[in-house]
Image 1 (cartoon, rainbow, N blue to C red):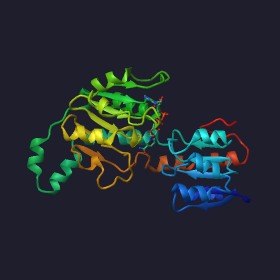
Image 2: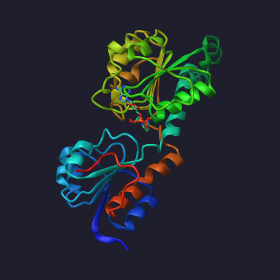
Image 3: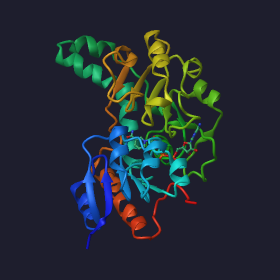
Image 4: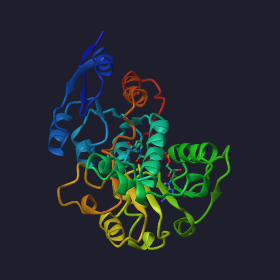
Length: 319
Ligand code: NAD
């Protein structure tokens, strides 16, 4: 039986089934907008807040929510939630860390191959009648001849590396700030500078933090191989877009494939929109039914916290 005194605010899109599970325990309000002013107003009397990628649960938002017990993030990254402020206010943050691992790994490999074999350009060339010219100019290395450099050897980094090494025959080097547990495939840890110098493909799988914001800046890019490919399925802000556009305009690297941007959607004058050898996808790494279902399951952890039970995937330890 739902408790009408229990107020649950849902700020981004969750499945009807997930909303029904929430409605079975409390009164649910769904928001049309997740900008910060709307969030501050909506959370004043709420017990639980559910978000996805674009609602920013700042310290101010948390301070407005005096009854708040739990924030549920459907997804992995916590860069849109001030977890420190949540902990200080005794608010539990739950998320779905492994929900999108396989889906993002597959998109990463699709982007790698799409960029390497220039698939979007060939498709466009055929449609515009340039078939022979496109075929005459086409030439690419095979992945099995190439070295993959993974930055961030966590869940997704390992899933990409495992598939690329075992399935596609790539050599793998990686950099992480912590040592991963023993790997079931061959990969060599290296310093970032060595990875930039040695990798044919650099693939980013770090969370967005103070340490990783603009990690790939002009200084890092200057160390890349002249034909290196950069794949970013992590967060757009990990790359300095202007510096990357500049390198690409100067033909100083092979290309970039980006599922994420520092501005989503990008404004018409975003520097990467006019840069050569870039392919984009609109932040679709987790867009598979299985992955979405796992993300929606965050509602069950929210309900556990509301009912005083221990959550499965808490991102903080409360005081
Ligand atoms: P994870 O926590 O398992 O792995 C991240 C790894 O990065 C960790 O091993 C961590 O130690 C490492 N790391 C952190 N800072 C680093 C630094 N400065 N240098 C080197 N390594 C560093 O996370 P995950 O599940 O693999 O997800 C990674 C990121 O992918 C998420 O944080 C999220 O931003 C992004 N993501 C994107 C999509 C999408 O739709 N494109 C979907 C899911 C996740």
